[in-house]
Image (cartoon, rainbow, N blue to C red; front, side):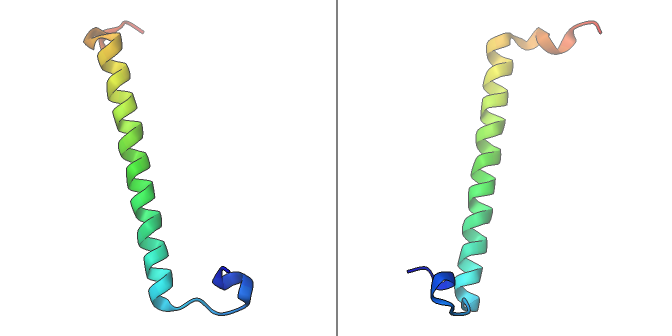
Length: 53
């Protein structure tokens, strides 16, 4: 069972590991977004950024 369901207060170490895991997931998501963005720019060609507005 999860600590929250049991009514116990989570330990400091558990909270620290949870925070580190959340940060790691956020960083991986940012890397994935940047990779998709770069792949889109490469597929569309470099001149897509030089268009007239």
